[in-house]
Length: 219
Length: 219
DNA sequence: ACCTGAACACCGTTCAAGT
DNA sequence: ACCTGAACACCGTTCAAGT
Image 1 (cartoon, rainbow over the protein chains, first blue to last red):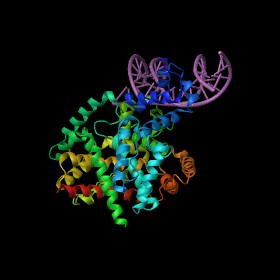
Image 2 (cartoon, each protein chain N blue to C red):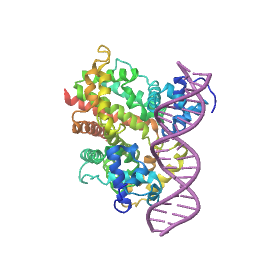
Image 3 (cartoon, rainbow over the protein chains, first blue to last red):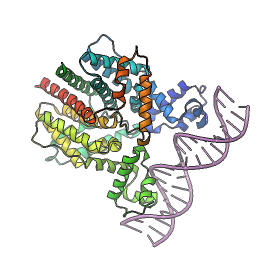
Image 4 (cartoon, rainbow over the protein chains, first blue to last red):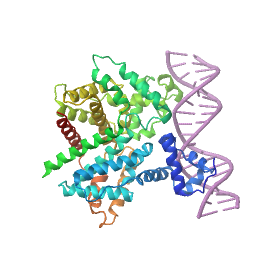
C-alpha cells in the first residue's frame, strides 16, 4: 500500500517484474501488485483481462531486454550469438524466465530473431521442419539453462537458497563412496556452478557444434 | 469422494499422478486427492508432511519408469541411450515431468544413471566440473524437450489445447509475408510437431554430437 | 496410529455499484 | 473511463480433538 504513480499498464508490469525478481514467480499475486499501487485488486482487471495477461506482459518485458545479433553473421556464429543474447536477457530476470517461451512468437523482437534464425538455417540446408525444430531447441535450451542453473534454481525461494544448497550437498556427500564416487566428487559442481559464464558458454558450444554437425550431414 | 482402498502412500501417489496426467500439474490439489479416497484433506498430512513431499513422491513415481541403459556402452552410445530412456520415462507423464529434475539426485535410479554418465564422461577426458555440467545439461534438456514439445505443452490444460493451437497458428499465419516468410512457412511445424520421435531423436543427436565434439577437443 | 472439524490466511475472479 | 465493495469458490496448512 504505497500510493505510487498512476495505474498505467507499464508501471504495473514493472512492479510485477520487480516482485518476481525479488520474491519468485509463485509469489506474484494480483493482490500484491495492487497493494504496490495502493489500489484494490480489481483495479488491475481494468488494464489486464486476467492474471495470465499480466504474466504475458511480464514475459514481454523480459524480451524487451533482448538484443538480437547482427544480420551478417553466418549460421554458426549467428546461432551462438542468438543463444547468448537470449540467455543474457533471461539471466537479467531468472525468476521470470519461464514466461519467455510463450511470448517469443508474439513479440516483434522474438519474431525477428526467429525469422533470422530460420533463414540462416534454411540457407545452410535445413528444410522448414528441421529448421523449426532447431530454432525451438535453441529457445527451450536457453530457457532451461537459466531456470536450471545450479545454485540459482528459480523454483526455490531466494531466501531459502543457502540452506537448500547445504542440505543438497550434505545429502550427496553422505552417499556410499564405493557406489557413487563420481557423484560424490561432482557434488559441489552439481549444487552450485563455480563459473556461470562457463556454464552457459559450454552448453551453447555443445548445441552449436551439434547443429553444425547436422548441417554438414545435410549437404 | 469414492471411498477407495485404504490410504497408503503408494495409492495416494498413484492417484495424484493420475490427476496430473489427466488434468495437468496445476490441477493437483491436496483436496482433490483426498476426495479420491473419500477422506478429509488433512488425512493426507499424516502420510506426507506437506504438498511438496507429495509432489516429490510423484516425481519419484515418474523416475520409477526409467530404465537406465547397459553399462558396457561407450560415451557416445551411452549418452544417447541415457537421454532416450530419460525422455521415454518423462513422455509417459509429460505433465509430471517438471517434478523430475529435483528428484534425480535423491532417487537410486537417478543416482545410478548419473554415476554412470559421469564415469563415461570422465573416461572420455572430461574433468569433474565439465562432466557435472554435461550431465546436468542432458537432464535439463531431456526435461525441456518433453515439457516444451510443440503441440503437447504441459502449461496448457489438455482440454484447451486444440483451440490454443488454432489460435497460435492463425496468429502466425496472419504475419506480413514480406517480413516473416520463414516464420509463416514454419508455423505449422512450430505449433505442432509432425513426428514426435523425430523431434526427440534430432535433439538428442545434436546434443550428443556436440558433446563428442567437445570430447575430441579435450584429448 | 490414523483421521476429523473447524478455523486461518490466503488465492483469482464475478458482478453490481460508485464517481 | 476507471475504480471500489462485497461476495464466491477455491487454495495449503494449523491445531486440537476424536477413535
